[in-house]
Length: 258
Image (cartoon, rainbow, N blue to C red):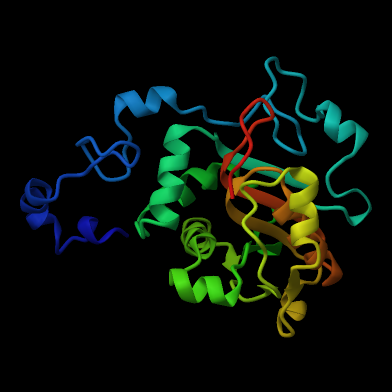
């Protein structure tokens, strides 16, 4: 529960709203309530979901059926032969608002935005067999975690676990070495940069075997980081890996996001 919605705080809400009015996460305009976007920002946001590729989530212009695959997944399906994630879903197509929210969380230390992101992600969580699911965030290297002070994916994972009741393991997956910034790299260079950069922490293997993993990240660009994480998770015997993220760079968009 948000602190501002706690029964003991509600009488003070009018005073708090006057002093610190709720603002749009995208542009800062005053809005009616917390975690609400203004009309202008809302109209520019492209929410992703059906109709889309059943595996990678690439949006379709027309509905092709619940199990339809895009051309790329037909030719080289995700998860084939242990290559990477089995399924990917994103809340938004990457754009100005999605980028602003991600940057405010990641670099602006607006950690409350993890609640907003998790609430939007929750609609992509499968309803069935949640007892077999486990939420695992994409980890940061320990030096980057020390410098930033938090892992934004772990914050989102905690919030999503609280909303869905699915168990969260923030320590099962670790980044074993530092990787260079990926923002200026193409898909092949990204894949090479993160190859072998993730591993399973010793105690994590017992909790991972046979589980369906919900892998949490903020931005999905080429999928190289998620695929590298998935390969490490498969070595621990997980059953499936589904990537859930805040925003996805669509093929027609400009690349270059870390």
